[in-house]
Each structure stands twice: as C-alpha cells, then as structure tokens.
Image 1 (cartoon, rainbow over the protein chains, first blue to last red):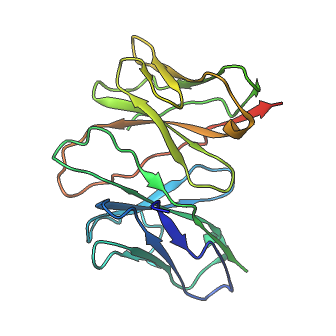
Image 2: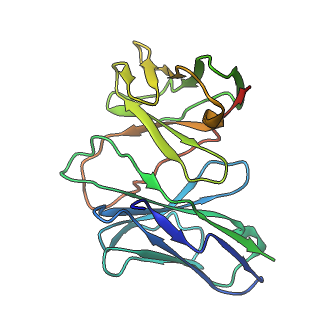
Length: 118
Length: 116
C-alpha cells in the first residue's frame, strides 16, 4: 500500500497523559499536513511541513500540541497533558508541491488516529 | 479563502444522478473550487477541482456557473458506496513564499445518502 499511513489507528488514554501519533506520507510527497476532526465537523487544519520545515504552526490548538518532521519523511504529532476536549480524530495528509505557483492542491489523507481521553 | 455554503444533507436513489450544490458568492478571480468527500471512518478523498470551466473526470463532473458564485458536483450514476459527506472548498492559487497557512478549510459539508 503506497498511501498515507497513520499509527496507531485508535488510542485511549487517561486525562493528563502524553500521546504521540505517527504519520507516514506518500514517499515522494514533500508536504505533510495535520488536521483534527471532531464529531459532526469537517477537518480542522493544524499545521504543515514543507520537507522538514514547519511552515505554519499558529493553528495548533494550544502549546500542548507540537509536531515534528525531523528528516522530511514521517511526522509525529504530540499532545501533552491530554484533556477530554482533545478527544477527536487526528488526520494526516500529504501532497507534492513544486514550483512557485500552487496550481491545485490535491491532498492525500490517511485513515486517521482516533483519540479518546478518559 | 472564500466561504462556502452547502445543504447539510441530501438523499438520492441508487443509479440516479446526484447533484450537490455549493454557494461561494465571495469567490475571487484566482480561487479554485475543490470537492472532497469523506466516507465514514476514512480520511477525506479528493474528487475534482475547477476554476471557471466545467470539469469531468472518472469520478464526477463539476459545473461552475458563469459568474462563479455557485457550483454543482454531479455523480452521474450514484451507488451505495457514494454515501459520504461531500465538502466544497474554495482555495486560491498562491505563490510559494515558504510560509503562511496552507491547509484546506473544510465546512460541515453535505451528507449524501444513497438510497437502494
């Protein structure tokens, strides 16, 4: 399977614990995105990387959220001191962007990690 | 990116054409219309995009009005597997500057239910 993969698919944790999710993008894709989706809502953009550079992080929900993509391949999203309100689906997507003009932006999404905070 | 308005839900009979409307009255000249869909428990999937001309691919057709203030996604022969939430997204072409938000802005979409 050469699509975007995420691990784990499901995570149950207790309030106050730290959690980390992993995303493996499509191998030749240079951009990687993280989204959060709560029940009944569309995905909400959090952050993205161009290769290993994090180009936007102001949309991260709080300073408890952080993301890395150290070698420009896979990425991790960490939530520290989880709260019940963090329960959601966390989606990763990747795309290939080249040149200076974004002509269109087809993002390929993974299956998501469903987080439940008790 | 311009705001979009979609009906919250629609029904369609299997085998019929499903026509999903989207209003984007504040769209600007360099903004494209994209459609994604999300089948239950899966990540969103790209369907089609267009600027001002009608577009067709193996999944769907996109009809954009002449004034570009609205569009319609057409699934020509809907099947049960087309039951999903469909998102209409308006997004501009930007110059890569190494910064700025580049994520897609999803609304609540239209929940399309294909009836057998």
